[in-house]
Image (cartoon, rainbow, N blue to C red; front, side, top):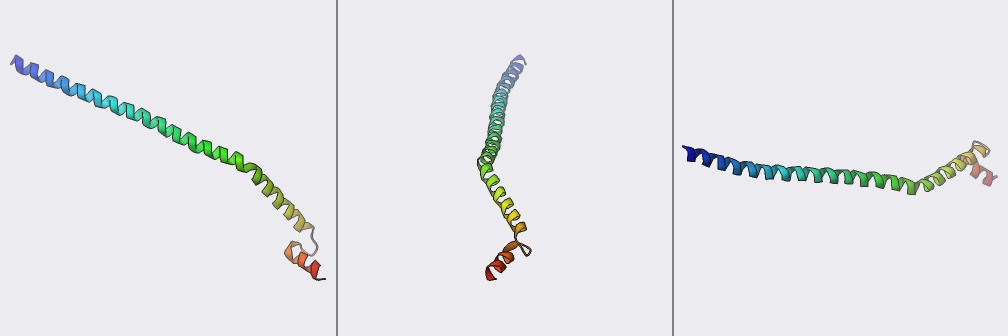
Length: 91
């Protein structure tokens, strides 16, 4: 009877040790997963900010040019636009 109890305790200890190893591996995998997830989002956000900083001067120039074109169209005679330019050349 006592040998059966010792055998059961030994098996229980082996199973518990194996379970502990698996749980430790799962915890380690979870930590790495969180780290790489954070790294992925940091790269995505960083790339978006960097690209905005890089493209911003070109966008400002394009907006300035479109504003100048709008001002030019308002200042043209006969309603402005391309029709006004062609009417001036045809005269």
